[in-house]
Figure 1: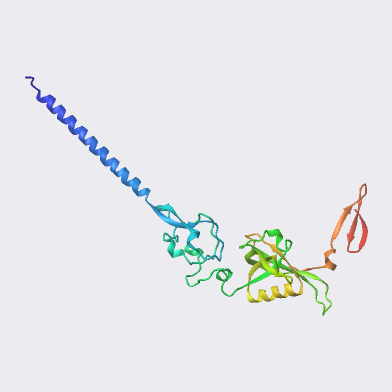
Figure 2: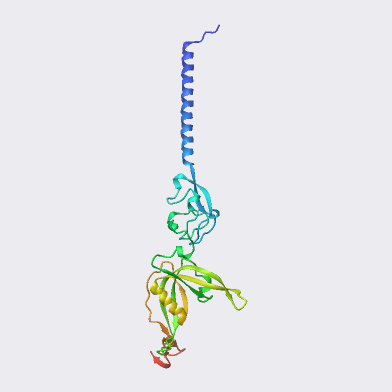
Length: 266
């Protein structure tokens, strides 16, 4: 019978204790890591637009889809229950896959969509017919801002034809074709219409300009909010400009001013 020395038993026991301790530490580390990973990967569904939605649109179920977001990255004001959004009206456009926020919705009391849902209180919506020139070849879109120029003449006072900017920095609520009936048979024809948001006073000016004259829309830069005061343009002052035309091999220029032409030496 082989005798086992006490020293060997002691060393063997210490090795077993060390191995068990290492295994326990590794297990605890893996458990903590697993819990941390589970915590960081916890997701929550968020309601986003299934496709591009324009303002004034009443939201329907097929317009929404749910996308998982990490809980730590969920934007405030978003929705996790799509049924809450059904029937609400957008007052701002929403792009596809973009979360729908409370700040982009009309109050719950607004049940109907359309332009009426997005008009600023104390303002009005007015539509004007345009062509490719007046509508700037389709470059005007909802959310843009425009100036309205009017060209007309006062026949009673025999005033000359004048063009002036009558409205500035006007918000475009809607822009696009409208179908109307034309002729005895009622054949539909496409007409481009731009709907502007105006105050009651601005609405009166717009109605007068479209009734008594011709209007032109001028598209503004998004960040340009400055008021511009002009004197207007008439046929008489349209050509009142001075142009210097240098002569070749000469020490003088020809100065054209109005209907007169004179030569100035230098």
